[in-house]
Each structure stands twice: as structure tokens, then as C-alpha cells.
Length: 188
Image 1 (spheres, helix red, strand yellow):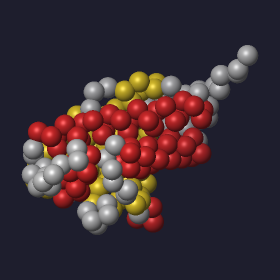
Image 2 (cartoon, one colour; image 1 turned 180 degrees about the vertical axis):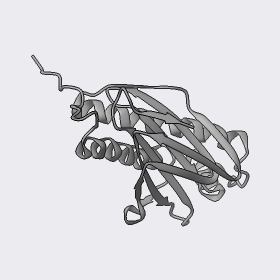
Image 3 (tube, one colour; image 1 turned 90 degrees about the vertical axis):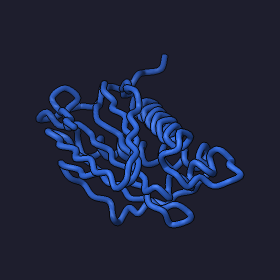
Image 4 (cartoon, helix red, strand yellow; image 1 turned 45 degrees about the horizontal axis):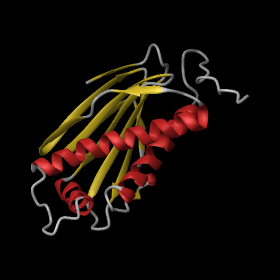
């Protein structure tokens, strides 16, 4: 009989740095895998430019977000400059003519679908690796010009990882992980 791994151990009401690192790594891998397979776009993480804070200031022209709660909790956000999401959507949908308007319904739909797929793949990886389970909500999509989104976190670690596409367009991944599955809160 297969033994089920225990949920994350908390000491002093906090996840360990190693546990947070496993969660973030799963999200990074899922972003790269989903964009390469579904989005037909190989991206490159600029990990030397990654930051770890308790507060995030998300910017770009389009973003998708999805909260997750369970044995670990937090928020996954991916934001794009308009050229990046148009490049990815063009590749993803095998469009004959490149998308140039990030407000196009197809582009907005791609943001929601990619956000959902990335979150699902990451949660599956975390479950297989550690046996930890979390449920996700419905993806939210925000599209505009130079949007800014402030994330105020209480008891949360926010990891910001910049990426570039083959055409050198920018996208950003934010993973906010609650320090404790019960007491950490994320307020937007």
C-alpha cells in the first residue's frame, strides 16, 4: 500500500523556505511547459532578476490570476506586455495573421486558458511530489494599457520572476504563497 505524504509541516506558523521553494519551482516549470506545449512559445526565465518580497506591484498590459487554497495557499499571476501575449496567442492558435490587439477576444480567452492550465499543472506537480492538495478558483483576466495591480500581502511571500519570449517580449510570473495555510491572507 502506497503511503500518502503528509501536508506541509508548519513550525512557528510558517512554511519552510524549502517548502515555498518547491511550490514556486512547480509554478515556474508549469509556466514554461504550458507555454512551450500549448502556446508554442519557448520562454526564458531571467532568474537573476527574480525578487522575493511581501508586496508585489504587477504591471503590464494584460494579466491572468488564479487563487489556490488547501494544504498550501496563495495566488498565481501571469502578466504580459501586449507584444508578448499577442506573440503567444498567434503561436497558440496557429494564426495566419499575427494578433496585434491584446484586447481581442481570442487573446483574452488565451490568457484565461493559459492561466488555468499553468495553475492546474503546477498543483498537479506539487501533489505528485509532496502529496499536498489545493483547489483553485476561476481565472480572472485583466486587459488594458499599462495596467498596475497592487498586491498587499499579510503573512505571504511574493516571488516575481521575469521571462522573455523568442522575440524578446516580456512577461512576468508572480507566485504569492501564504506562510501558513490557515492564517496567511492575500488581499487585492
